Image (cartoon, rainbow, N blue to C red; front, side, top):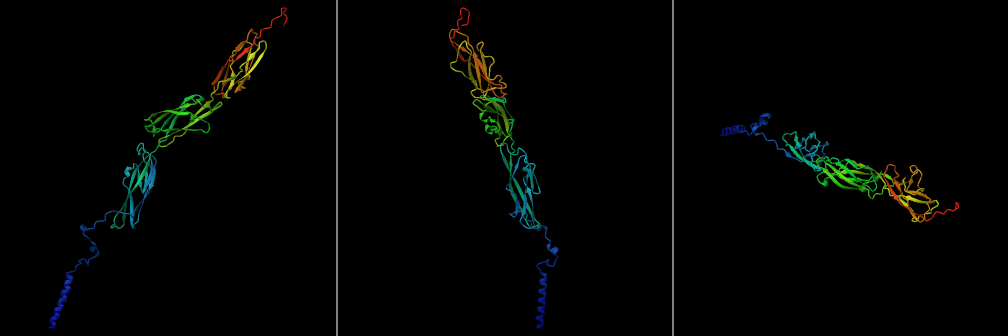
Length: 400
């Protein structure tokens, strides 16, 4: 009985050990690592999809300014705040920037002229920047980031240019008028008067200013050539600027509708005084007595005290009388502002009072030699010749 029980226990232990080896759950347990790590290609895990991440940072300003026809540049950089990641930058709409180059993080561009729409001062194009960051661990996902940077392009504004500015002449007298023409080329000039270049008249510190005497009469525009012609009147009717002559000028600049100013142009004149007619100081009652030499002195003068006076060489006066005015040589010793005259005459005897009228002309000259204009006055002063009859002769022929 004891032997039978021992045999049954032995068989049970053998079966238990055999079943453990027969039903082993891990068939690769005793295989090599290469076999253990091998996978079925059809069941290989898919890589993680790229995903945006705040850890990827594109470093730039919010906007950059460019100007038509001028080359400018700026740099972009990328930071990835996760270890073992490196990134690259790409501009996805570079084709919207004609001629632009983006290399090693540097954006270089010369905006072509005309890229800003006509009539506008600037335009704006968004620059789209994409960043991609990859890890050295291929099982980690690709990280991305995007940023839009404002690119502001300013128009290249042309300066207006005054191509001509002149009066009809370069000399003017007080009291006269003239016309001044100013021609301006403005590449940005518009089609309405509000968009024409505006002229500004500037005072001069070195000469008399003509600006207060100028007024704009009209503007003629040639829109195809962007040429604007301004007509000014120069009215010196009430001007009293100089005692004889002086330099006068006006500075002009043209300002475009965008505030761009042309270089200054000066119009220069030689301005001469407006001469006054000479006047005479002659008494109301001048009497000459026949038979004796009578002398009468009087004055001829310039009421503005500016000119130089001379007597015309052909006075109409009685025979045997003399009229002398001023200095003997007015060219070397001019009679400035006033002139003393002397009339000498011994009237013949007469049987009744007579009124004698003299006639002579006095000329007023500018003291400046360049001015050939004169003003003159013809005078007709009167002399009362008293009644004095000739003495009778004695019958014996002796003197009375």
